[in-house]
Each structure stands twice: as C-alpha cells, then as structure tokens.
View 1 (cartoon, rainbow, N blue to C red):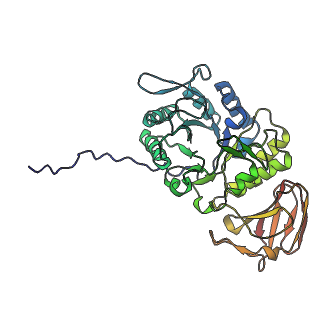
View 2: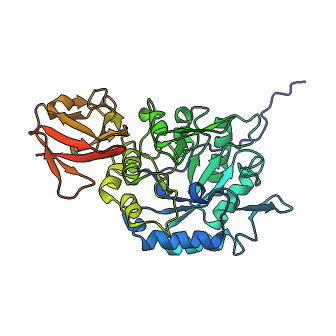
View 3: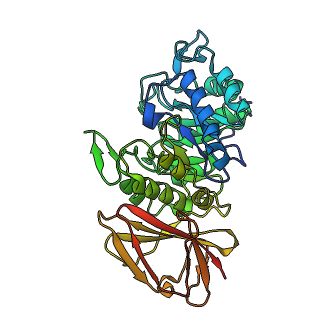
Length: 400
C-alpha cells in the first residue's frame, strides 16, 4: 500500500517585518533609563504632553515608549493585560491619548518566559500578544532577551515578527538581544533596529561591572560599533542603546558629544530622561535640529572614523549625506582641551561603503558649525581650533 501524500497544511508563516517603517533612525523617548520599573499611565501621559510642549515633537521625536513592568497577568485564555494599578485605563486608552498628540506609542516585551523585570514574557504567547498590541494601537515594540533558556535569537525574533505580521498592524520591531547572536547579520528582514551591545551606563567613559554582566559608558558603546556600519540603512539600523542625556552624570559637553556621535552613526535617538523637568541646556541638546538633520539624513549611511592622528585623544569622523554634503566631527575623548591644526586636504578620503568622496584636495567646501550659529569654516583655509575636553566640533560641509 502506497501512502505517498502531502501533509495538507499549506500554511506558511511570514517571517519578514513590515516594510516602509523606520526609513530614518527612530526618534522618541523610553522610560527605562530614568524610571526603570516605576511606570504608570499618568507619567506616560505627562511625557507625551512634555514632548509636545518642549518642542521635541517639532524637532522630529515621535515615539513614547513604555519599557518593562507595565504587564499585569494573563487572563484564562492567555491574553496579556496591563497592571491594573499602574494602568487603570488600559493601554488602548493610553495609545489613543498619545495618538491625539500626534505621537506614537511603544511597548515592551521579552522573548523569554519572563521579562528582565520579572513580568510575563511572550514565550509561547507571541501570537496572542501581537493581537493585543494591534488591538491597543501600539506602534513600536522593544523585544528583550532575558530568561530565554534554550532559545535561538534569530528564530525567536522571527516568531514575534510573524505574529505581528499575522495581526496585521504595522509595528516597528526593536530587536533587543544585546548583540550576542550577531543580529546585524540576520536582522535586516526581521526587525527595524537591533541592539549591538549590552546596556548603556550613565557615564561618558567607564564600565560598570555587575559580576555576570557589564554595562558600558558612551565611549565604550561607541567603540563597539566598529565594523557594523555596512549592515545599517533605511529601515534597518544598528542600535547602540538609548540616550543618557539629561540624566545627571554627563556634563553639557559630554551631552553634546553623546548626541552628536549617535547622530553621526545613524543611531536611533531615543531620549531616556525626564522630559518634564529637563534644563534649558539639556533641551537645547536634544532639540538641535542641525545635528538631528545629520542623523535623519535620507541617504541613511552610518558614519565612520578615519584612521588618522590628530591631537591627543581626538578622533575625526565622517558621514556622507544627500546632495554630496558631508558631516565632519572632531571628537575629543581626552580629559583636556586639545588644539587641532590641519590643512583640509589631509582629510581627503573616499568612503568605500557609499563610494562618496570628500574631495578636499580638488574641491572647496564651506562648513557650518552645527553647535555654534554663524560659525563657518572653509576648506580653502587651514583649520586652527580648540576642541574642549569630552566634547565635539561638528560641521556640515557643502561644495562652494
């Protein structure tokens, strides 16, 4: 007897992300860096209000993202519900409020059995959770990697992507598995951004050792991006973690350097401070439209460091932009002010990734200082400047 027959189940899951989302690096706010597990609906509403009132929305920020600890219990059918004490009105009402401000709501879950904060994870409930997110009107999902015993990252993230695709509502997927399983290799068709490292630490240049894991300062995170730029582009970004600007540990120059370098490497700009109480200085950093313009450039090319020796501790970074423009940044990593003197012809170089040429040997450019209004330099004249300690000078160059 011949039992040659097909299984009969022709259902094939779609493991590809929603297209045409995050064509420039996402900009928004997330609760974790400042508030950790202390989240509730009143605070989230106030952050949405503050994002509008402070001018951050006008500067390009759009996501209000609730991180860990919003979860309550699952019901008898397995559907997740928010913590009723913290979110008594429910996530749908909160999403409606955020949307009424012209903003978008983000939420958090985890590929494992529990979130990093010990709340119910999505493992085994991916399709149910995706249905709830769609029902609530969620626009962004940060999907973490705690308590994932035995799971393989690529497969786990494909499952949540398939679940969201099945639910039908376009949602930006932030892959947050800390770079352990090289998500830049497989993540382009699965998510819209992927964490490249462990957590950021509210420090400019240091490491915090937790014993079994470490968190990293701004400079350490920046260094870990080396070799990854070829994987980034419109709709798929390397994510060096959220911003620590305005959280107290960094001074004004360090805030500037942090923000500028995230802009130069085409990183998501996700603020992590209290928007309701930020100082004018912090607001000025987070809403600098000239620097944001570098980050949001539609060419979508991640910047790179040139292998050259300038002053002690000073790195020079380049980012090709649309219309053959360039961003050039001098980053002073040292604890002392450094004098930089150079002829621009010495920085003539071709980006092997984009094939763009900063042709200072043959072409004259004019550069606007993006942190100081009316400060302009020309490549026809030698540069003679001081870069303050733990700070940057950054210019946007156009051909004359």
